[in-house]
Amino acid sequence: MGTKAREIAGVDIKELVNDLNRAYCDEWLAYYAWWYMGQSVEGKGYEDMAEFLNKIAKDELEHAQELAERIIELGGLPTNSLSLIEKNANSPYPGVMKKLNDYDEIIKLVTQAEAGAIEVYNKLAAKTFGKDHDTYQLVTHIMGEEIGHEEMFENLIEK
Image 1 (cartoon, rainbow, N blue to C red):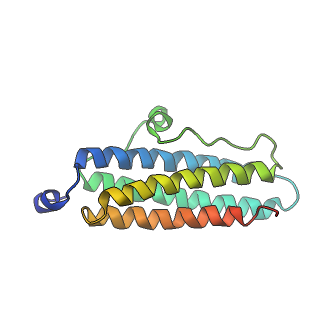
Image 2 (cartoon, rainbow, N blue to C red; image 1 turned 180 degrees about the horizontal axis):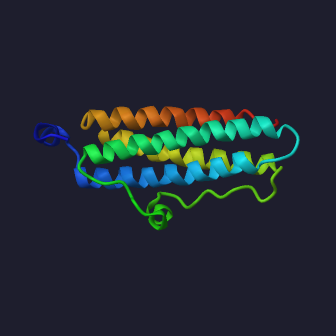
Image 3 (cartoon, rainbow, N blue to C red; image 1 turned 135 degrees about the vertical axis):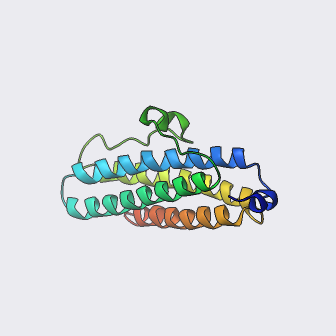
């Protein structure tokens, strides 16, 4: 981020980098949980559930990459130690299903984590709105995808 951009940003860049790093750690935790469940799910219709989980895992990895790029643009460095990922995240590791065919538990884990992500990105959007336009666009883009993830899994709940 150049001198003029820093001048007009209207946010504490160091604090923003810290917030983005926390979101970056969240994305890595979600990526791993969804990827793991996508590889190990079993039971009736497991192919469909695995496909959903793997699609979302891919999106979460993309979010981590986008956040890493923005963190670097702002003059920071993304968290670079696996042992610090959960420690520096907004939320603890979301966990994985205890039974490989427990779709209700998978849906609960995913929807709770996606709701948490939506909250994180909503706060980042409010913090950067009208100030740091590039970060604002990034976090609202990611938030839109998280909203889609939450809806995709909520639609699987039997009513």
